[in-house]
Figure 1 (cartoon, helix red, strand yellow):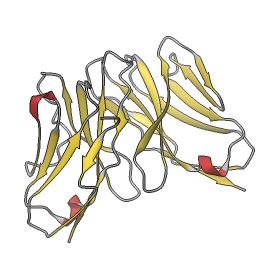
Figure 2 (cartoon, each protein chain N blue to C red):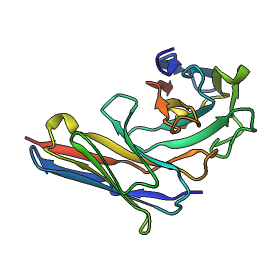
Figure 3 (cartoon, each protein chain N blue to C red):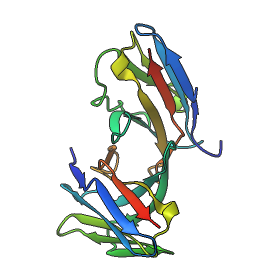
Amino acid sequence: GEDVEQSLFLSVREGDSSVINCTYTDSSSTYLYWYKQEPGAGLQLLTYIFSNMDMKQDQRLTVLLNKKDKHLSLRIADTQTGDSAIYFCALKGSTLGRLYFGRGTQLTVWP
Amino acid sequence: GAGVSQSPSNKVTEKGKDVELRCDPISGHTALYWYRQSLGQGLEFLIYFQGNSAPDKSGLPSDRFSAERTGGSVSTLTIQRTQQEDSAVYLCASSQTRDRDLAFFGQGTRLTVV
């Protein structure tokens, strides 16, 4: 199956940019996803990128995909304290297969 | 429904009892997932249903765990003879493979085994 890796912790100051990285072992996923989990809550689908794209921008969020290096990143511009959460990257090993998740990156934003 | 619904939201049970957790997926979604999340941990895959295909049960931690999906819709996760290590939040998600396979999660069932 897939092996999806993320660093566990990231701390930034309010107003700075945050970059959360994810690497994976297989590249057959049609879409790749980012989820956000706030304390005590379920997972919220934040954004996704089609595997044929290199970049997708959605307001303060930018997703970058480097298929050659099997590297996915999520950039949050002008990070706010409300962005403090755990961020998970996810992808599928095959079209009809299941989702694989990274262990999650705990983002802490300091005022 | 508008989203994935899980019930109960909280369940406290005594060690050795059986529990059933329910998931109502988004209408029309063909794929359904169960994960669990222990305190401060990541997501642990349990089981995956995709349409009429045989479910991927590779994540079930022991034969005390089972799940079924009736009529391609509602799913029930059953844990028999619960143990304290089963305490976790059990999360259900559903997706439609034909629509970017976007998986949406319910709010989870917090299971506490005492």
